[in-house]
Amino acid sequence: MRIKVLGAGAGGGLPQWNCGCRNCSDARTGRIAGMSQSSVAVTAQDNVWVLLNASPDIRSQLAADGDLAPPGLRGAPLAAVVLTNGDVDHVAGLLTLREKSAFEIVATRQTLAILADNAIFGVLDPALVTRRPLDLDRPVDLAPGLTLTAYAVPGKVALYLEGPAPDLRAMGEQTVGLRLDGNGRVVHYIPGCAEVTDALIDRLADSDLVLFDGTVWRNDEMPATGTGAKTGARMGHVAMSGPGGSLERLADLRARRVYVHINNTNPVLQPDSLERRAVAEAGWEIAADGMEILP
Ligand code: MLT
Ligand code: MN
Ligand code: ZN
Image (spheres, rainbow, N blue to C red):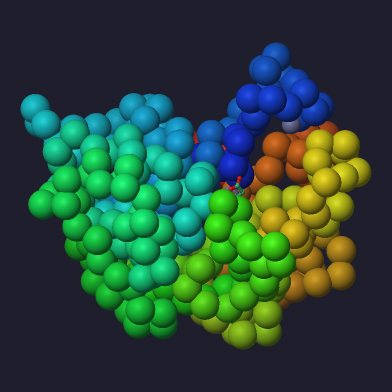
């Protein structure tokens, strides 16, 4: 299996268009690397690729990657796009994938219903771009040599579907983790997760690679940096640090562990920060755009 991180950032990317925080300012001056928004590409065989989420930056992500270039006059080596939820940073890139090439959109019925309810996604010609519903916990053949299993992780509905009091740790079809089996290796991709449950720890035990929600270092990071009022928990993202954080809860995994979906406020983005050092000492890597992983 080959994994490429097309975009290591959370929604907004780095720099975010309207943010002047230290990280965003440093990314503007080139002192630290920028990040495009949340997406990963996977192949197991024959240069047939699957995208895990389609970010608003997909056009430049695909243009920057030689493996994903059209093999001929028209078309792309893209078999499917799998969606982990209906968030803008994960579905908006689908609109860029119009222009009459065939691929599958693979997601839970609840996430497919979001696409069905928003007429703009009809721009993807249904004769070419088919929509395949995923049942939770049922493995399916995804692409040559690649099996996919989606499973519920604690999360909430997309921001634009929130009612007055959304369930922030709902277990169901609104937020899923993905298990990929290929070439005898097991990879999990979990860009959004509100809580690391015991069941999730058990599920990850036999994996070779875990790409996990690295949105915030601390739960109150946005209030603390003055960038916003929402906590990580309110956004549906468990923090890296603190009691119940992913560093503590996933400390005993034997898998290679890489944080993805990193928010522009996260202090681990500063190469010389204490937080960056703590993450590295705990055995985690911080994803970067273009990072390639052979699990
Ligand atoms: C998230 O990961 O919390 C969402 O992408 C937020 C958003 O939709 O902007
Ligand atoms: Mn997001
Ligand atoms: Zn910022």
